[in-house]
Image 1: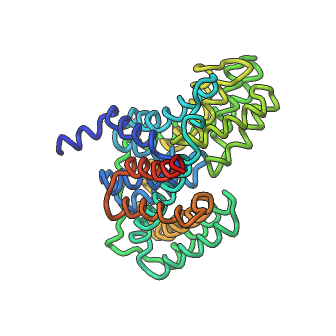
Image 2 (image 1 turned 90 degrees about the vertical axis):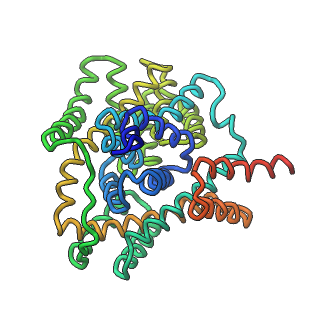
Length: 401
């Protein structure tokens, strides 16, 4: 094994890689999956296209933020439990710190970035997601049946825009793949080197369900505001399917009626969360720091952040050993062939709504997004450089007007 490969396995190296992504990954969870694919499948070759698609499929099935769970799994695969923590910390801390600072009344990210710059970041998200669709479709949809599955999945996702509809599309695609598709020998399962045994996985899953059942009873009994905060944010992270924006109603129901955070502050924090890179679940750091009851400031922000992401780690560490074993089965590989085609379709639907519809407003927007896509796919420029260039491409003309 080369020195470069060995250094890639150190938790500190994993942290630095994900820190760079956490500082530059704008555009929401679908764009994050595109950034991860470019970094870990195309550039670093930590895993293959099919293995990455299998991992994305698992995280789509689990509750919680799919992109953050994919990041934790990649860190776990590379450097064990410490790698999973390093990946989460690197990807999450930049946005969490910015939102805590915003909550404390300091210069927030929303004020630091001009509207034109933010629009440039939306345009680069179009390019990143388009790059992911392009690359994944070429590998995962090589024939007419799977191209058809991709198209139907995209149509259903656009006509039935809900998290449960997406889960239904994935499940139906798995059944169709099981019945109609026969994976070739060249499509053999690509195993993920996850250093978690089945017994350890069962323990993590048991802890997930134990906390979900016991915290609602322990919090009122103890009378501890800190434990009440952990209970609220843990349940929000454990029970939301679809991630991202889907968690907002759950959080609002937990913190606004209880008086922990005022509705105006909640909306202001949500606006600031749109201006920072990384996962939207880091919004919990703002809410914890803004709390009017119990821990607040840095302590409250850190407690809320840890509590909302804890279910994601427990689920991914618990499910991966069993998922990996299932993936070796030939019938499961047939089902996954259908599911992977559907995942590409869901990504294609997301490319149109909300990524394209919210970003492409004028012919100039289309031109800049096309240039960004060309820079990523054909010029092989690093994503962070394309992010900077797209932001400047919108901001500089706005300033010169």
